[in-house]
Length: 172
Image 1 (cartoon, rainbow, N blue to C red):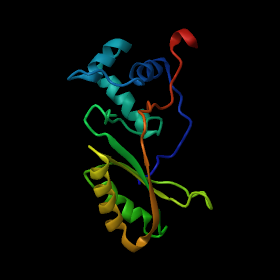
Image 2 (cartoon, rainbow, N blue to C red; image 1 turned 135 degrees about the horizontal axis):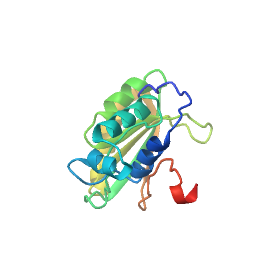
Image 3 (tube, rainbow, N blue to C red; image 1 turned 180 degrees about the vertical axis):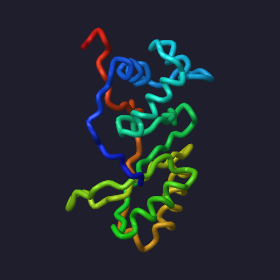
Image 4 (spheres, rainbow, N blue to C red; image 1 turned 45 degrees about the vertical axis):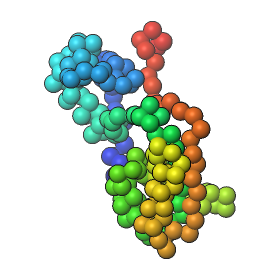
């Protein structure tokens, strides 16, 4: 439940664009990934880091993080839990759920009544359905009377998660 930086128009110069293109598929698996990116784009490591921080501060980059393949790690029961939580408590309870070690991400979303009453989402990962169901029970206990209903949407396949992509120089 993070505050979003003010969204102001941001001019990207040629170096900014090269940095985005070099990193949009992920950072290199290297002890110094920004040095590798710097070599690719013709800049210093310090300049790449400074520009990425500027893009993050301006809201052009929201976050940098790992995207694990849960199936490869042995987690076969991956479920997006959805909860109908009292609006006046959803932020507080969402922070508590997001802090649980078995929740990979937790966020508030708008309801779409009458068909979708859920306003709190939390992704859980279990080695099997029984483990995931135990985790869901922990969340239900934590929410208590503030929750009116919930459901679980289990993954049936891996979906590739990507954000906005720039076309490469050969497709401009």
